[in-house]
Image 1: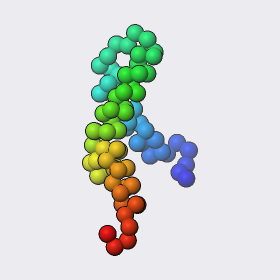
Image 2 (image 1 turned 90 degrees about the vertical axis):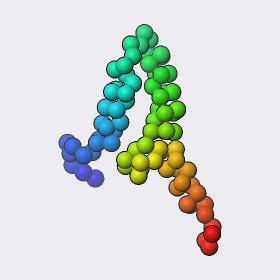
Image 3 (image 1 turned 90 degrees about the horizontal axis):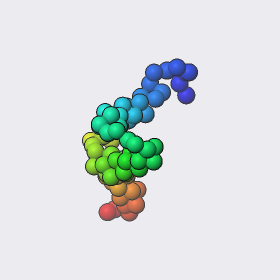
Image 4 (image 1 turned 45 degrees about the vertical axis):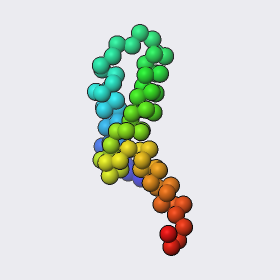
Length: 79
């Protein structure tokens, strides 16, 4: 566990939130909180997790990375 106030603690989260704001939130003017919530949910589920490449995952999308991990873990010895 790192120390309190270590700048690396939240690096991935801060990077994600920055990207979310730049690519989505600051481009729209939401009228209602529910509209913003639904748009952000759709962005994360349809683009960020399924299509957007992530450098920390070897430039794969989270969906593809998990798919490959499951295939690797379920692969029988000798295959």
